[in-house]
Length: 548
Ligand SMILES: Cc1cc2nc3c(=O)[nH]c(=O)nc-3n(C[C@H](O)[C@H](O)[C@H](O)COP(=O)(O)OP(=O)(O)OC[C@H]3O[C@@H](n4cnc5c(N)ncnc54)[C@H](O)[C@@H]3O)c2cc1C
Image 1 (cartoon, protein in one colour):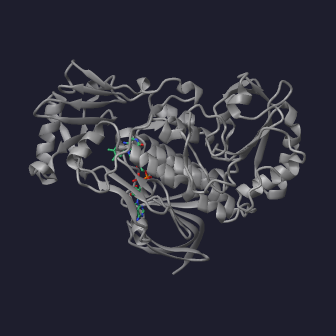
Image 2 (cartoon, helix red, strand yellow):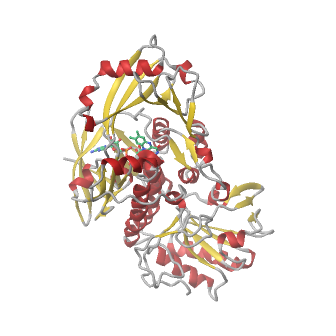
């Protein structure tokens, strides 16, 4: 059998796999992305992209497309039937967080369901030349020190082909077979005691959803109780909750009964409802014990699955993909040693765990406590403000160089004391308004896949050193200087305090917009200092060298 060679084989074209393929493409790495389904899914599932995810898409130059595909906000209403005029607003995300404008240029969330996001990402990946193969599934794989050998099946022809990849990415979702094949155990409660049937249907319901196109509608009437999620003018999903404790099961909901329930919930019996698919669903809390096994990495739900109550699943999946992409690219381009790849686990495992824990807080916790009392795994945490699982943490790993590295355990993960990010190494860069070539933008707009160095007017020596280091270490490093005569004008007079550097200082930012290192002052030898810092981040120098 002929063998195809690829750098990276990504299994699964959900939010994680598609984003990773694009992020790798941006780094100049070609990947093969395979997906078992024959086409993108039109099932809405995740609906809201949070600001951190929009920042990732911004760095890919896709934020405008994503914005255009969605709507500003998704609310939740309760109505007797969809046709009824009475309504009660249950959730309006704009009221959840105050002062977000100090943290990100984006609002808390932007409505863009997976049914619109995935086609957009697929189209973009194909346009950019990513090898995307739908209708292709991973059958088996083996790995050794030279790479991963995988057998793929074309589902239309049943033909088996062999691929040799330097790395295999398991983006194969919550029930990851790759994770299972690797024998990686998981932490978490597993399936939660909430049972739902997702009914995907077609109906001419355009007039009923007018004004609610981005919303979720709970219907409260006895003969049609459930929740509508809208896909588009003639397609949607109706979620019906059933209770196994009362002896109910999914078999109690055949197509005819679902059809009847949806008609009653619509409140317009004359509308024809065609059932397209039924899925029995339970929310899951499950975090893989390891995200890496040799040359195989778990990304997205395969690594961290959580119930959807805080809307963090696909968001965390995409953010983990971003953490993985630049590291994998740096190793494949021989800019970094494979030590850099181990920091994917060090950094994202605590985040995945935090997000999975937090997704069990809030009103949902009451249900679980009642239903699952006695489950040893159920350690419900106190709820944190919603911003914490998104940006309220600080990585502590070998890919971060901070004042405290010498004393802190490299696996230590810290929640930030304050959500006003101050440029601490390991945290996401603070959002500061700046002006570049007459254009107002955020510090977050400086990211396009490269490392970024920020210096003040007194720190031009850092800036000069950056070009030399980039060519010596073979990396792409965009260096910017703040100042009236320099390339960046700060529109925020408190920028030094916001970033935690002085005018003579410097801040090195990773391609994922996290602070790698900063110096409050000019060092005696900026070239040597910066070179040692970058080499350390890339895993080439194991001795921490915060002050060179
Ligand atoms: C009802 C519902 C509502 C949700 N709401 C939200 C929300 O509001 N916000 C949010 O952030 N998240 C939400 N989520 C969670 C979100 O959908 C998931 O976190 C997200 O889809 C995970 O993306 P992924 O790419 O990791 O996995 P998936 O989207 O599951 O993609 C995995 C892909 O791998 C493919 N695959 C599996 N095995 C193979 C194989 N052997 N070969 C080839 N392909 C394979 C599958 O076909 C699948 O397409 C919700 C989920 C549900 C079910």
